Image 1 (cartoon, rainbow, N blue to C red):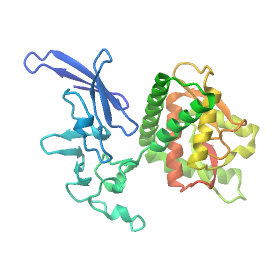
Image 2: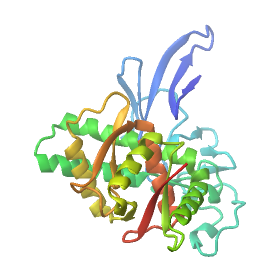
Image 3: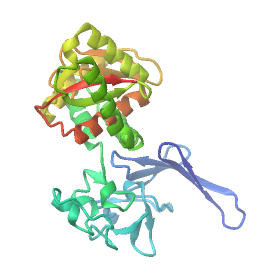
Image 4: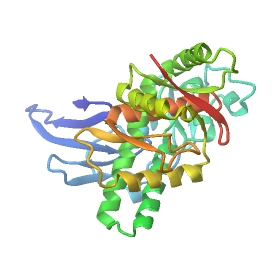
Length: 327
C-alpha cells in the first residue's frame, strides 16, 4: 500500500498470510524525483539508490534489500521485463531508449524531437518523460536545484561559517524546494500560456502605445501573497516592472546575497522569503531587493511559473521582460 502527497510519501508492507503490517518505508527523493533512500518509521536509513544519468541502478553504489519498485524519476520499475513503465511506452534505462516508437511526429525546428526512441532527447539530466510521449517532456527545475546549492555554498563562503551538518541540511532543503518547484510547475504548466496571454492583454490596456514585451505573469489567484508583494514593490518603483534575465553566474551570486540577508530573519511556520526583483534577473540581489514572507507553496509555484514563462516566451540571459500581476 502506498501513501501519496505531492509525491509518493511511503510504502506499507504487509504479511502475505496474516495481512498484518510488517514495516513502513519512507521515501526520500532528489531534485529529479528519483528515490535516493528509504528510512524506517524511526528515521533509520535502510536503503540507498544511485543511478546513472539514464536511470540505470548502480548496484555497487546502492544498498539495502527493502522491496521497492518506484525508483528512477519516481517511476515504476518492472523487474520481470527490465523496463520502466511510462504509460504510453516502456523505457529501458541501460540503452536510454524506449521499447516502441513514439507517436509524436516531432518538430522540424527541434531535430532531437524527430528521434522516435530516444529518452528525453538524449538529455535526461534536464528533463523527465513520465507520459512516454516526446511532446510531453517536462523540463526539470534542475536550474533551481543547482543555483540553490551553488548559492548556499557561495553564501557559506562569504560568511565563513557553515558546519558540515548545516550544509547537508541546507542542501536537503533546497533539494526539496527544487522538486516542489518542479511539481508546482507540472501542476500549472498547462495554464502558463493562458496567464501569459492575460498578462499581455493587461499590458496592452495599461500601455496602449507601447510594444508588448516578453511577459512573466504573476497569477494573483494562485499566489496572492506573492502578487501583493510585487504590486507593492512596483507601486513604489514603477521601473521595477521591467527586468532583464541574468546569466547563471549572476543568478547564483544574487541568490547568495538573498540568503545572507534572510539568514536570521524570522518568517513564521510554513513561510519562506520571496524576493523581488527576482534573483534570476540582473536587478536581483541588490540593496533595493525587498523580502516578504509568503507561503512556501506560493513561492515554489512562482518559481515554476517563471521557469515556464522563460521557456514559452523564449526569455534568454540579457533579454528584457515585464513582470505583470494578473487577476
